[in-house]
Image (cartoon, rainbow, N blue to C red; front, side, top):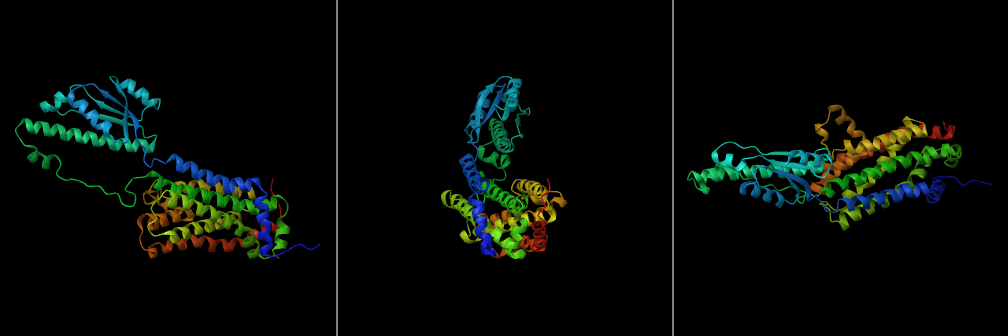
Length: 389
């Protein structure tokens, strides 16, 4: 009985292994697609609105009530509780019933009119980063407006007209025009990195699993014989079926993000499709590198999990890489998601010329070139066929 050999035979065998495995179907297809729908649904509003806060108004004057009405008019702020006790408001914040407190002291309006400098205080819970940051903006803005309103009242009481005092109260008028994402839609910022990050993690894990499982099941040497001892035939035959399936998932991501949700894609389809394709290929190459460096199935999976999770933080979407420790800045280049994120910002958001992003595409290709040096170690790992318990 002869055994079919060659790269195509390995590919057919791998497709059969994928579609006959519940782990592959759930892990490669269901998990990324389900993650996409959950994340899109969670951030459907784009920007958090009506974040609950408590107001402590010890003054209870017409001025303080007007100030509270201005604050409640902001779209991101929802005054849930009006308390006469700061302790009660603090307890509500500790129970996560509110995410901020606005405190107006006693005799606020009286002190303002008499020339004594009153103080308003606000507190935000920055354990919840997004809600805390958004509330901080609104509370600071209304405090600045209150200061200007008090200054205007004092000037008018002294006989100075509004036209004369406004250049003093607001010497510079700022017009803010956020580029690329004028809606400040968090889904545009986050989902365009979280979903590729999930895809990268799944690709790396299944690349290692596809090779390590051969050894675990005692079929590593048989695979080497099917490939005729050629590292290229073995790895291409094993990887191409996964590349094809993950590319289809990437196309689904793009259809939902840029087609259905109309997220910005200023330079069109091809630059971003190429970025997704290279993210998949570079992640597969990184999986090969990790298994070559750590020729132990379980240890390589652990290293891949660690890198996959760290890539969300070090890619720069939540904290600028340039503000990180210099060592972390250097380490960021070994994560494919970092280069994908830079391509996304340039090509989809900002729409700059393709040539300015060329080196980032090359950076993703470098993972593939580096993986060539580990092909021999992968073949030896398979041929030795020794699974460590």
